[in-house]
Image (cartoon, rainbow, N blue to C red; front, side, top):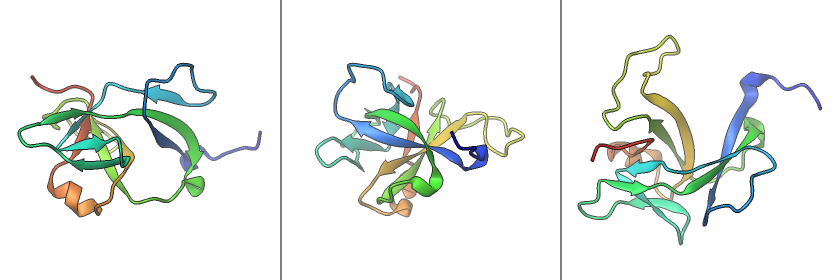
Length: 129
């Protein structure tokens, strides 16, 4: 193993079609998140505009893999913020982020970042019913 600066280590996400049967050799699977303001188009493998009157849609199962940022595969994406709850409020922590903010996820998109930002698209670990 060669030494790696932890500051350059990130996580890449792969979006899965179905529930995995076995555990990954590296990284972890994440499921149970919700998309607010968008939905996942499983055919095209992109986020898409949400259906009328649908506030929350299930996010796809993701496989997070440790990766160096320099090794990222480049593709059109939206840096989707993940929040613990839908209010998106929290106390400002010493990191400069809200205590409600979890992390960003690079999710494939066929529209530019400002399109999704204006729609307030985010992922949530839980939503209000």
